[in-house]
Image 1 (cartoon, rainbow, N blue to C red):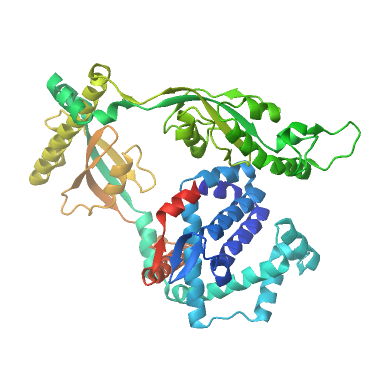
Image 2 (spheres, helix red, strand yellow):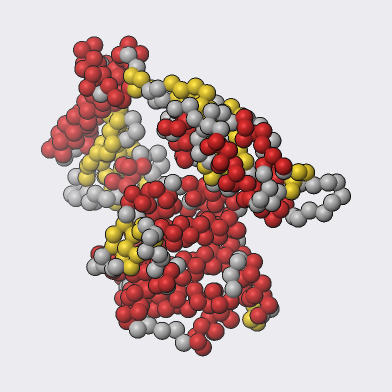
Length: 522
């Protein structure tokens, strides 16, 4: 999800729209009336006694996805909403904003009307040639489905919550000495020598016996089960099926008629969508009343009955109507496996999906003979890795005792590779984990290298830092120092703000109904 934001957020217009999104997040979660709900509504979470109902939570998720659709497009927004973290992120945003709103209320923070007006008029998006334009203001808000009153309410609340950031920002200072230290840290050069101890060198000695393979199989037989498979028939009904057709909410499906040539029709967005919505319940009823197949519903709506490929339990296809977790789950639902029509499932794009079973293959355990090779390879890899680690640890200990990095070669068995004048950003081929570690350990003392080891993708690497070259502080550009100091203060401000919010949450009574959250999110 964040990659989408980063790619989109480079344009000037995008940044304006993202501001609108951020402000909408503020409004939701701090207005008490939004959380009153009805007494019969299920609760997703409570914050110091205030309830967040499932109805409000679902509306919030829908609103977020709608705003994303305006900016990123419906497909991208649907993909974001499919992310497992989407529901929890939305809920946490609501909770955090409720906590901040309550804290602002407790402190008596206010935003004067004059300050609000000044803030609105200072936003470049609402200006024409550098001067605030009421028409620009109203048009841009309307294009994003907002009224001036809504926007100003959100902006006022945002400005009120911004006042909570004054203390973190005031104490998030950095000194010139700290900036100099960071610069020197970033400009440091080091010489490193290293040897590689590959797991592969120990593969021959790590091969398991047949008995070990069999023991592992019987102890972990569940790992070797083939997942259940299913193939289904399916139909998809959506607004596209009603283009050029007349349907009223009271019209039966069998009497859907095509609009005559030359006869005026409403635009696709309204006509087709309205016609589709008018038939949703009829579609569901037909699935229920003719449970033994999809022919009746397909005939009623002139739909083509499609065949899925082989669907594997737990493996969501990359494309097609089953490229959503809930659609795959529908294909494996109890009703479908019992030979009945499924219920109608609303897909991310708003279409309805219904399925009927063709073939089902239950999950089953593979025989030992089919997986013996896989098990042997796994056991070999694990044991070889342990032997390589033991060897690396022994060589490192011996080299440290001897205070001589040449011991790491084990009498020439492992070549010693030199990496000269490396920096934190350029290891010149040194393993990335070793590069980080090489700049973490102390500098050599009295010519004695500092040594350590790290795990790599192919085994272990033992390294020795032999020289450290620190830059001259006099060479530091004052402008660079100022930039580093500003960056430090910004980062510290963020950390303090995060800690502040964390403290508010720890001292509040927050309860999340995980079961209800999972049900709504999927």
